[in-house]
Amino acid sequence: MRVIVIGAGVAGSAAALALRHIGAEVTVYEAYADPAGDVGSFISLAANGLRGLEALGCLPRVQRLGVALPRQRMWSASGRLLGDVPRGRRGDDPLHSVTLMRGALVEALRAAAAEAGAEIVTGERLTGVTEAPGAVTAGFLDGRRDSADLLVAADGIWSLVRGVLDPAAPRPRYAGLYCVSGVSADARGLGVEPGVFNMTFARNGAFIHLAAGDGTVWWSAQIADPRQPRLDDAAGAGWLRETAALYRREPVPSAVLAAAVGTHPTVLMHALGPVPIWHGGRSVLIGDAAHPVGAGQGASMAVEDALVLAAALRGRAPSDVPGALARYDAARRPRVTRLLGAAKDNREAKKAGPVARRAQAAAMRLFLPLFYDRSTAWLHGHDPAAVVVG
Image (cartoon, rainbow, N blue to C red; front, side, top):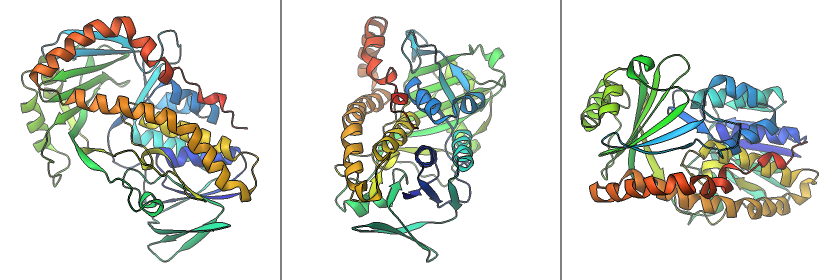
């Protein structure tokens, strides 16, 4: 079976690797010269995603690139502890959540896919997709065309393929949040405990910080603003000054920001309504192209998608691609739909006003110690490695 993958980010690289494991001939097309470039900041992999990487044979490589975070602590704007729970795992799971730079994860997965025999072509921007009964053809901006038995669209939240499959598909919209992220010096001097993912529900949005392995602090301010900001100057001192002013009343975020030594490009957070059509006869959406979930599960869900898609295709003839895609959709949609609801709640919690924030804090102090582990077991306890990739 010959497969074209569009996009060499997390989802596309994981899919290429999983499909090579089942013996498919894979070519990955990526619009950017460097898909692991300066895009975004740090991302996390929960236990379910890490088990998926283990099935793909690249878990140790990814673990070496990041920092293990066994615990997550939630704080009020005033600095009161709201909850201390396992981070991205069940309490008895020895596999600890890993946080690392997005670019490092993309590089690791892309290298693993190439080592497994996938061809990766950069600088090729998709312009169209045409399906026929026995093949699918991708057209590119420079006039290049390529045909295969299957096209896997891992082209992100702004997916071109999603619109080809369904011209009435929902479009991304600004979610009322934007992220300013960066690095601060001297984690020890700031009193940032290693191994803990900290989230402060501040007055102007959530503030995340953690101690990195090199003694610095990685941080991200997820700022609530109903007006979409302009990103003419996407990184730099101006964004840092504005962010510091917004968090000046929160002691810990303010101290972390005062020690900042650099920022990453500011990014807007977008939401996408449920996508009714994930596949055609020979094209399929995965990752953010089908379901941008957030809630610390974006990368993990992309890895799960890759494994389930490969399992649906394993041992199938090219003529059975349409049936395999229907099986993939049926296997993935219920789990993703459940997570989308949690992701929406997560976004709204970060935009809460003063009254809602106080009610939220009271509920968290009560709920988290008693029910957190049980309520997230379906998510973190899932083992995509049970879908064995041969």
